[in-house]
Amino acid sequence: MNRKFKIIICAFAACILFAFTVLEGNFNVDPNYSIRFSGKKAEGTFSGLAGTVIFDKDNLANAKIDVVVDVNTIKTGNTTKDKHAKGDSWFDAAKYPQIKFTSTAFAKNGALYMVTGMLELHGVKKQIQIPFNFSQLANKANFAGSFKVNRKDFGINGNMMGFLVGDDFDVTLNVPVSKK
Image: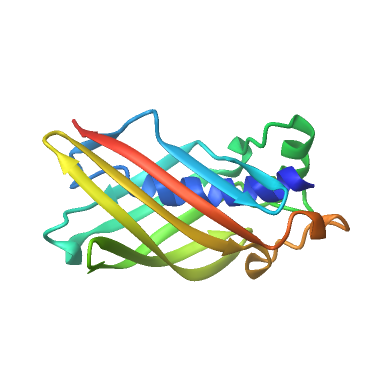
């Protein structure tokens, strides 16, 4: 049960993390990226990112993120928890195999950037904002950000043990990239 919720959060994080992996269509994601989630007695990672990211810090009006994460890539460190997280009481990976994120706007706020977009998780779409840092040195760059997700906002109620994992999860992304 703990694992299922972790899987949901990881998938969401992975989706967002991948969204920041391609700059101006000229970068590849470094395989050392990370999408981590943590909450009350539930933590883990997601992998399996795919999609398109266009990012130019000097032209945010043309920036775009459209990514997905495979819910089945959730890893909590416990195969039983992973199985529960993928089950119909939590992520329901059979019915909702992907977490999706599509940006609608970018902005700069001091040293941080902010992406606003639609997160689709468990068949529910919600607008979210994700603050992130962007750093670039020559042919390499890095996106790093964190945000909170409430599983119940996405219709993930869990089973009778859901109270153990809590409702809110912190999602942390770190995505190094390099020029193609």
